[in-house]
Length: 257
Image (cartoon, rainbow, N blue to C red; front, side, top):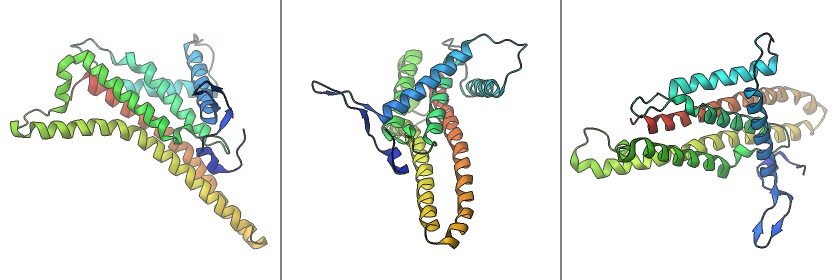
């Protein structure tokens, strides 16, 4: 269950092998950490649903939860405009955006724990989420606008001879936006983890040369600690960017641009 190398956090391994007929139902490290993130998400959602007592001064945990709540609420207000024609209110999508942000945020944080498993470093996971959002946003646009939704792929004022080419370009761009949503998240997390793993290995090898190298090795260790703290900031930023771009997808589906 425990890994011996930091680079093993990118490898899929089974904790419990289960074979049922021709189906492989094994419980892997990916499933374990994803279930852990889902449990944290459910716990925080239940905490947010509990009634608040205005006479109680919130502690650090409560302040952090309120900050996440207000940040996501202001994000939804600014990024998803209400559609008066279809009577669609942007606040309807707040629970989804909040849940998505918390899931990715804590997946990123858990991946920063030494010898844990980075779920958001797996492109199959990030691409799965981004493509699901793309399909969901497309279905939402079709439900709200019906056939008018396809006008999203045709810029206004396009000359008739250029219509087939521009429709193809806009369609490819639309699909690429969905793919880039997951690739951006996965690539940034992988890059950060690999940087820390490679620098940590180099510093460890350098400090094992002799006593002088051991003493001098504490200087790059401080740099590695600073990079580790920076990774926590990047983990938050990547979750926030993912939430912003998801709001953009939803807004484009509600209000055709």
